[in-house]
Each structure stands twice: as C-alpha cells, then as structure tokens.
Length: 254
Image (cartoon, rainbow, N blue to C red):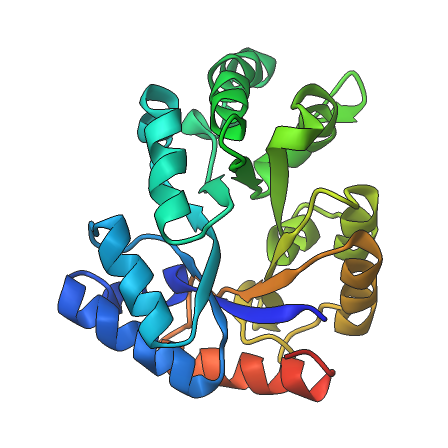
C-alpha cells in the first residue's frame, strides 16, 4: 500500500523557525498524513527532527537538501539522514537549471554521481526532483533519460513531479512506468487552468489523470506519494493539503 505524504515545501512559510516547524508537523499529522518530505525549512538538528517525527507519528522517506552540502559532505549528509531514518537525500533542482544544456549536464553528473556513490556506502540514496528543463532533448534523448542511464541504479532515485512532467508535454503515468523501480517517491501535484494560465491546484481539482497515475505508481513500486503545491494561489496551504489528502483517501490510498 502506498503512503500519502506531504511535501513541506507547500507550507514553507510555516517552518521558518523550530517552534513553527514543530507545530506544522503536528498540523500535517492531524490532517491524517503519515509521511512528510522535509524541504525548505529552517535549520534543524537530525536528533530534533527524529524526535518530532516520532512524536507526531510521521516518517520522512526523503528530503530536499542543499546541493553544495551534498557535493562537499555526502557521507556526513547521509549519516545525518540516518538519524531520522531517511533513505533518500533529494536535490530539488540542478545547479543552473541546465541552462547550458549538455555542458551543465556533464558537470552535474561529475558532481553528483560521485556524491551518490559515497552516500550509498551507508545505504542512503541520492534523489533527483525534476522540473520541466530535464525534458530538453539532445540527440533525441531527454536529460531525464540520460540520468536514468548514467547514474548507478543502486544509488539513485527519481523524485518524479507529475505537474512538471505534464507541463513539459509529457504523460506523467507513462514516465512513472518508464522509471519503474527508481520512483519510490512521487510528487503528486495537479494542474488547473484559470483564464489563460496554468496554475497548481490541490490534487483532484485540476486536469491530471489521477486514476492512471495511481495505477502507474502501483506498477512502478512507488512507496510514497507526496502532495506538493508550490503555489496555493492565495488559499490556506493547510486547507489545500487537506483537500488533496481527502481526494487521495477516496482513491483508496492511506
């Protein structure tokens, strides 16, 4: 059974200090979430986070972590994650966003394949979260496909984001299936149209094909579906998280 989690980037304005961070974990737990992705929060000690997660009945399977820190101290980062039983150190975006195409991609590989191998020595994987830029093609091959081939499979995970796959012109369900076995965590983010704009929406309130996406996740071996809404368009982000959770519960997820 896949577990529903909350990507805390959604409520980043409520995690700017430890007191608010602790209160936010409780609020997320009270909605019914059993998992969180720690991202864009204030600084914290691993032991503090481990205590807060346990207190609120939460697990943290993946984070977003500063890329410079991953590159400079991969083993220390991995060991800190082990303190709160987190198996994936995630990077939210490649440095520079691949603006220089293959040149940036080669530098990215040189830095992060080495870091991934180092973290894997203690059983922690490196995870990469896509936006749309990874769907640029060079010689007919997307950067996302190149990562799938170039990174060591035993040390690497995709944190696939449904919204950005759709934004790129891709089919989220198809991509989840393509990356089967390396998508333990998937970001569930919906897309709605308001006027002439593409906007992020609570899961189930936009236009993504969630039945297909959920089936694809089951096929791919996904363990955590993490609700994320970068922009709540003026609405209460906790209310958005609640509506997403209720929709996914209605689909049989827990």
